[in-house]
Amino acid sequence: MGIAEIILWLAVNIRHEALREPFAGQVAVAQVVLNRAKACGTDVRTEITRPAQFSWTLKRGVQLTLDHRQPAQLALFSRSMEAAVTALLLPDFTGGATYFHRYDVHPSWRKEKKYVHRWGAHLFYSGHFDGCGGTNAALPPKSRKERLPPAAATKPGAKEGRIQEIRARIDARRAGESR
Image (cartoon, rainbow, N blue to C red; front, side, top):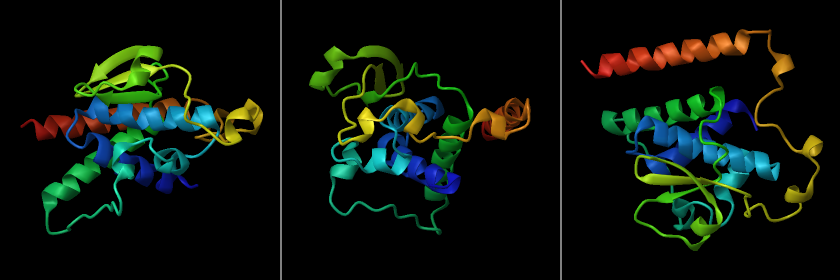
């Protein structure tokens, strides 16, 4: 799975799960997917489309439709893509969260997990992810797929410089929106 496909899947999930959430909440939703993929040794698409994991995937025939004549739709999806990229570039700030739910929903599993934080309308939890299923959960860590290339694949300090550049762009864009 290429990086563009990872970003697109994360953005679609963010769009359906956290479209109007604060930016940090959108990034946290993406982090949950990444943490699940890491725990299960799978890829982002597998975790998002795993049965009964995300509410929007339970609906039959769900599609992402964007009307290019509706700039507001494109702007919202663009923000979802920005959150997806941010989740991939920045360290996980969710404390390894693998679960979340809206504040007004009370799933039975929440009592077994450790509450991490609330971002927007969602509460996030960490703890052993029970949803892997199949044989991937039993694979030793070395045989699990990595979500990003190993740090040795980049020049020393390059990743930190790129993260700072992304943060600066996000800050600049937000400053422009607030005018």
